[in-house]
Amino acid sequence: MSFENLKNTIKIHVKYMFNDIKYGDDSRKPLEYIATHTKKSAIYFTFPSNLSSLSLENTSLFPMLSRVTLVNLFKSIGVESVPEITLYYLNEKTPFEIFENFCLAFGSGSEDRVVDVERLNVVISYLKKMDSIREERLFNSKPIYTALANRDFEKANRLIEKERNIDDKNVI
Image 1 (cartoon, rainbow, N blue to C red):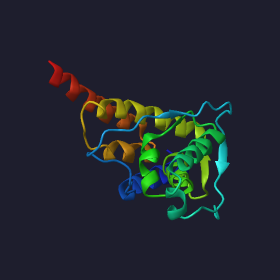
Image 2 (spheres, one colour):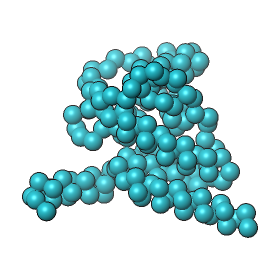
Image 3 (cartoon, rainbow, N blue to C red):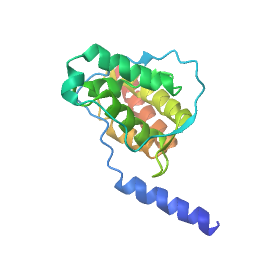
Image 4 (cartoon, rainbow, N blue to C red):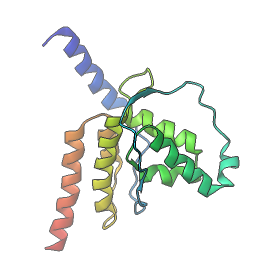
């Protein structure tokens, strides 16, 4: 193993240990995902550091507009479905804040604010699997969100399958 590979592996593990992801809960059923019907292909893009946003007070006056704005933000970059967790947070944050937070948490691998939209689509596919189970039975989803934020898709899949198996055992 080269020094560069070792350095990257250590960096990923340290990030994983200290990454306190704010997504996930065990107290609500998931909302419905909204298809964006995007025609754009997945891209890499860089978030501007001075993304202007309206205040929460202004956007909360127009909840449907906030929802449409969020859908259009995801659609504009080639994301296939709006993650339900982002819709849930519309009561607490502006669409711009939610969009930026989600994209950087799950689509960015570094500090340069470059987002991999293909990775976002993969993350959302895992979240859809997780939420299909959460519709039947509530469980703490934070470990799955944390694994996805750390790009540990194998762990996320294991956690989802574990929850699915608990559901299957309850049926028998």
